[in-house]
Image (cartoon, rainbow, N blue to C red):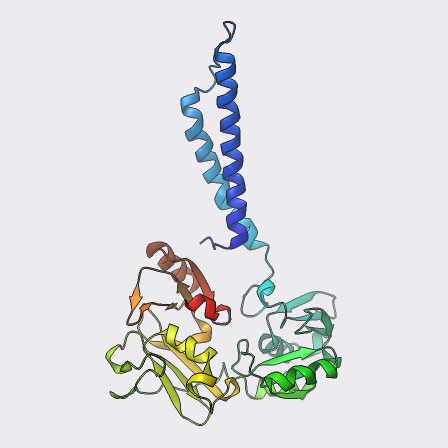
Amino acid sequence: MIKTTGSISRTGFRLLRYFSTVLSLIKARHCIFAHSRSFRPPRILPLMLLKPALLIFGLLLFPSSLSYADQHREECELCGMWIDQYMSTRHVITLKDNTTKSFCGIACAAKYLNEHKGRIKDVKVADFLTEKLIDAYKAYYLEGSDIPGLMSYISRIAFSTRGKAEKFQKKHGGKIITFEQAFKNQLSNPSSDVEKKPVEVKPRDKCPVCGMFVAKYPKWIAQIIFKDDTYAVFDGAKDMFKYYFNMNKYNPSKRGSDIFAIYVTEYYSTNLMEAERLFFVQGSNIYGPMGKELIPIATEKRAMEFLNDHHGKKILRFNEVTMEELK
């Protein structure tokens, strides 16, 4: 299935514009020479058949250009997410045979490092502010800030100097640790890999964002479960994300680092699943209890099918959702 992105659309438009220009030039040439008595229309391809032929040719090339663009985007070695979307958290591991492996963040990098200990030559991480790669062993990691984690509910981001880390810490919280500590903590408490069952929604449980009784909408339920076993429930993924991005407003006593698990109801199975593992279709014609909704779907293939069937605008992973996408 072809993925759609901004860069792909531009490629397609260039192709279509090219064919349109060619067609216009041929038409103009036909009109100019048609007034000449010596002009004889070409017999190879009648003009009336040229436009359909060019359109078919363009459509044949168009999918090829789309798939080519996607196939050449660098992916995370473990989860498959595109690296260019996570330039500020990426890790690059060089093996002893000088091959390199790229990862979206420390969650995936730590798993790979743990499984290939004897093969590692070098580890680099992106400075969160400049996105430049630095030696991971010399980096200063900030753990547990209010920056959302990637493939983990606890964020661990790196800085090239302690001064940068301390300045960022004053505004966003967290504690400064070494790469070795970040690696150890990620493996001992990965959050995204720890099983914690969804809570049973009570009849009087209300969505803290819109105030509706959540139990009335079982096909749309979303949940945030905290480490202290308290929770918040929602009547859709959209309100869950609004709460997630504005906990200071809806629950001032909690921070992102207090979250243990996030669940949303998968559209087709109607089962509660971990939000980080799903794909969210934005802008479709399927509405939830609160109107326009982000539709959670288990696989990318089914998400693409849903997007095409229900006129969706884009597919987002958990960490790609922003407040702007919720409007």
